[in-house]
Amino acid sequence: MAGTKRYAAVAVAAAALITAPTAAYGVPTARPAPAAARPAHGTVLPAHAPARSARTAPTARIVAPDEHVTEPGGAEFWLTPEGKHWTTLDNPDPQFTNVVNGNIDLHTPGVSAFVEGTAQGHVTLSGVYYGGTGTASRVTVRTTAGTLHAKLLELAGHPGWGVWYVSTDLPAADDTYAVRHVVVRDTTGGVYSRLDLG
Image (cartoon, rainbow, N blue to C red; front, side):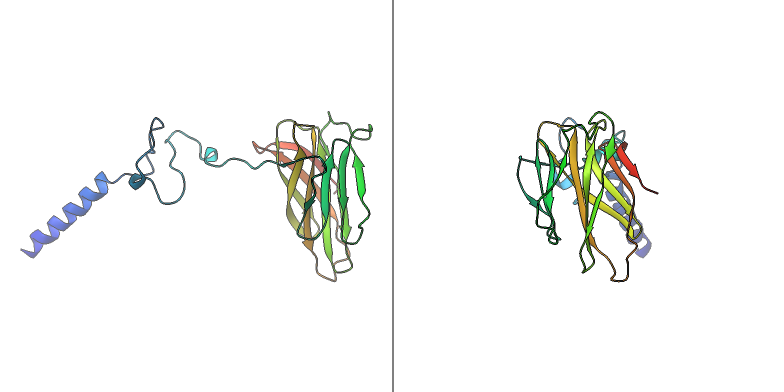
């Protein structure tokens, strides 16, 4: 009798596994699955869909002309049709990079980089990216102290350029800090533009 109960319990468990919905087969795209059939976390995709399509690549934050954006370290950035403006805690006088005076060729991919530090070891890195194909999505900044991931700002209307920025704190003894590479990637993961400093 005990053997019959064990066999019946195994058969019920096997039937439950066979009839339970699985994420491996996906959900038909014509209509969504009922909430009970969907997993608690994540997205169920059709079996033929590539895994990358589950996430949308980030893009630049679109700002209005003269809209000020303050980064956690206190630096402020704002864009106008003429270019990038910024201040830092150590330098409250507005600084400016002109993108329309001919110094930057907006039709050739490029990136600029500015590094500004405080006596307390806080460093703000920023620059202008321009001329790439596609939509700028991510900026990776490789420095002598490690890799940083920057944020992006752009004006509406695809002006052909944008601003990247990031800040970090350095150990007090680090007086050799330098930027090695700045790589801007587009929404497909390709290189939008880059700066190699060695």
